[in-house]
Length: 554
Ligand SMILES: [Zn+2]
Picture 1 (cartoon, rainbow, N blue to C red):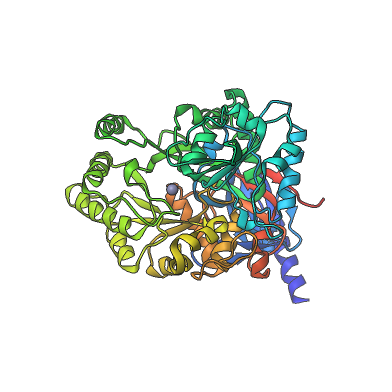
Picture 2 (cartoon, rainbow, N blue to C red; picture 1 turned 120 degrees about the vertical axis):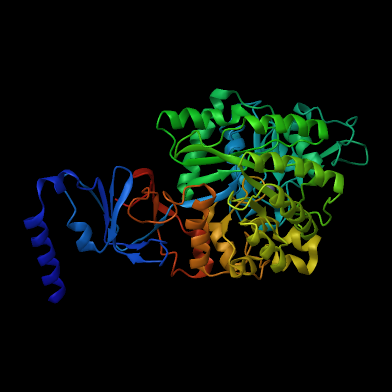
């Protein structure tokens, strides 16, 4: 009775006190009757949200939001559903993905299902055109049969299309048509860092091993034309929206240049980009002479000339290629002459005040990098430039303390989702703490959670959240014992990541003044059994107040 009375009173007061001005500024959209997980500093849970001009104007109780409604306000009845801020990935390589119309095995736990997906894709692809899966899965995620694909299987599925199925960055399976198209035959020698498997008669078996082998094969898949890149980009953005992503920081990749960013620039200039892309410039010099050239480029660099949908924010993730570490290799290169080249580049970046994100994983390399950074900070202070390390799979407490003293931040990734079993083979007992989510969180350093998709993990952010909470890879095997709570994981995948985009005033939580980037979920992230977090799906994805994905039951 009292509830009804107060509700009625509020409505009556709203009608009596609403002047013309208020009505003119009524929200475009309200979401009511829900559980709004704001992820603000107090982790406030509200019932309703009001949006106007792409931004949130109010978050509050049902009555508070009802009172703001105007005659043309769109009302979304949440029917008790949960809303969270749009998920932000702090490190992914999706820009490069537009090179091909890739098939993805994200979260697929059955080998039979993967084969079915391949067959379906082939049936829709004209003869002679390539069908490619470029990483994003591993054999260990299949619970029916944890193995790859034979030449015979792929030939049966695809007698007329070249097919490449690449597992992580580890090896690639090709069919006969692909071997012919890629000019791989009995006479082909092994590429550097790779091996072309051959049978007793010397004929290639379809399996190409090693990171060098994977790169050798990928380089033989012809790039699609720029028109196709635009179509691939639109398709990819829709796919990311459907999984709940509203923004990301792109870490570039090998061979990337201006043309890779063109589809995004084109879409953002037309107001047609339904996701926010922030990116760092990547160059991977190998020799001192190449370092000279790149330093010249750094002196001309002007980040932050874009918009809140498309902008360059700095430099990364590989600064000097020879000192780049690998997740599945224990050794790191800490040769002084190579670190000296990295230092030259970093000093040039520090002099320009440019943000730098560096890829580093193994303990010895983290130490060596920190020693350089500390020395650079004495020459040209970097504290205040938000410099970050990405991955940090073996970071120690002492290293985290050194990072904090330099004002550095940490971007941590869910790569064991598909590589966890491989990591245990390579790193043994240590793999249980790679990456050390709990240690990093408890250190108090500013850190965020992301994927490092596409090749080395799945793209789905709910899998990333699930991994941080459960330590389980795709398929269910437990591989990490550094779990954090689901609240900690959600903060790390939203509000904390906004900082890496230089967008903490605009993104990351549901609060007045911030952009209306949000998700309506099909189940409650905070209360579903932990094992179901990975299965959560958005029903609505909204970016800047625009519904970019809609699966809401009508
Ligand atoms: Zn990386």
